Length: 381
Ligand SMILES: Cc1cc2nc3c(=O)[nH]c(=O)nc-3n(C[C@H](O)[C@H](O)[C@H](O)COP(=O)(O)OP(=O)(O)OC[C@H]3O[C@@H](n4cnc5c(N)ncnc54)[C@H](O)[C@@H]3O)c2cc1C
Image 1 (cartoon, helix red, strand yellow):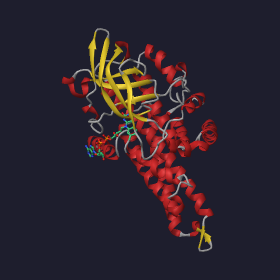
Image 2 (spheres, helix red, strand yellow):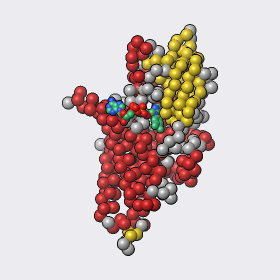
Image 3 (cartoon, rainbow, N blue to C red):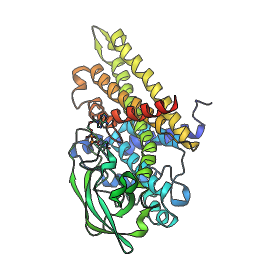
Image 4 (cartoon, rainbow, N blue to C red):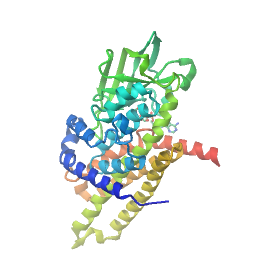
């Protein structure tokens, strides 16, 4: 066992930190207020290899490990969780779906464009009536000759109105339940497809979240990913990795909020001394930093196991559950430590407090993570 980062990983962490401080930090407030994805950031993320992090170099990716990926997402999310989420959804959900389950032609045509940062990708599973119960989705794909005709809509899709390549789950055989769901690659300019309502959100406002609408979209049969009926199973495998990325996003929020609080507690004086002298503040920091290390152990372990080719439904659910709930606790603690100032836009802890909540909802709520964990441990023991 080894709990230390290699020299390469330390350098990687530093380079991501430098990039985020230069290209993201100065604009965090502006992007949050505008509530729109800054399009020019896509190319910059692409140049840094951040849109093909875990994609093999033969498809234009950076070929990093999942452990490296966690490290990158933690650093990005520490500066702006909205950017962390966009990078996570692009890499773990859209690009990795094609990477793991696509054929050679699909990888050459679509994965390279995604991995080199030519465009952002999106991944659509959720619908108005199918959230936690994702298998209840109703979007239909009917085969006609060498095409599928898609009709339906998706909700809450990250990068939904900015992505040019999208992976979407649809029902190909309504008699087969979850075994009748298939995955397709959609291009933004396919006639009949359009992004719908763009959500105006509490947090992670710079990340685009939109509805997807399909009206008689003709999708070539060559855009079916893998076999018909395998889409739901593929999606569940993709979410195992996706949950590690949400755990890493949560680590960034918790670390960012706690580091800002530590600095503030040393600087802010009340009763003629820094508030860091008070035990009440010290205990909040002690609990927060201890739980952050515990969340890191769960998250890096899940990523490590993924790198070993292990199946990680329980491990990723545990990492996501613990790290996301910590992100909420740590952000709340950070606002408390900042007192009234934490409640204003003068300090970024206010933004962490809004951004963190998505972590306990996206890619399966905390209740669904507990359900997955309980199901697994009841099987195992
Ligand atoms: C900003 C944002 C970005 C997103 N990005 C994407 C994306 O890129 N792609 C995508 O496909 N989806 C995306 N989603 C959707 C997200 O995954 C869903 O919102 C989430 O899975 C919950 O579904 P729901 O919102 O329908 O809530 P519901 O399923 O309606 O849940 C409502 C409440 O009921 C609880 N609940 C439901 N079922 C049970 C149960 N069996 N036991 C106990 N409690 C239960 C839930 O935990 C929750 O507290 C995104 C959502 C948001 C907000």
